[in-house]
Image (cartoon, rainbow, N blue to C red):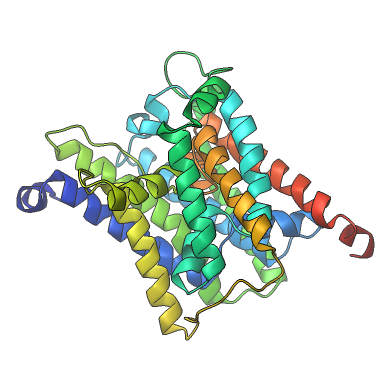
Length: 352
């Protein structure tokens, strides 16, 4: 696909925004219809079940991994150019930030991506939580919490000035990432069959993973033709939520992939909910106290920025390119989420 005419017509920034809007739109529709959420999968797993929520998460993760690894094998994408791989990663940030983020998403009753999707459908609790998440993420990026984040992240960083490529570090054969993705997909489909998950939900769950691969592919293609440096990136919500907030607060802010991504997710989820008749205003009542939701959102804002990504950014997007710190952060998110769920509702294990 020749992007030069499009870039010449729109400019590099607006083209990146358009690609973010497209990636986010696919993500928003698919996430809303599949009810994809890491928090839901973690809670289900914490209570000893491998049910439909775990199946949906595994299918999303494996789809992103399969598409991205296949693109690399075909020479259509090079993960070495991704910003997540081209800069040093933080092992300490992945562990500490992942634990905080995981615990926070259980308190908030949803990860950052899920909060954005729910906000688009009219959930006021998610609107408030999402705003708190974005504010704390910005504070952790360049505000009052930035020095603490820098100190914790600097405790243990990757060597060589780059993140760790797990395939290279473990001397895995060519195609190992694709094989792993296919194996996880097989497990996901087995669980889906056992729990009688409908074909439509499976397609939409795969669509969330495809959106991640789409973002990688579009920004990679743009970087190859752009005159100015363009970040090769994909779906994530910690940094983009903070930058989108600043876009509305700072007159000097410019459009980019991140702003388009957040807007695309919101619009996609809004349209999907409207088409399904699920668009309705929801108040603050529910099983999760507003206090817990606010604290959890703040924890996710700091934890996601410290970990180098949220449940999507590190858990799926970074995982799909086999970034070492992303996989460690994902494991820490599962651990933090399980620990928080058992602390809040551990008694349910006895009766389950």
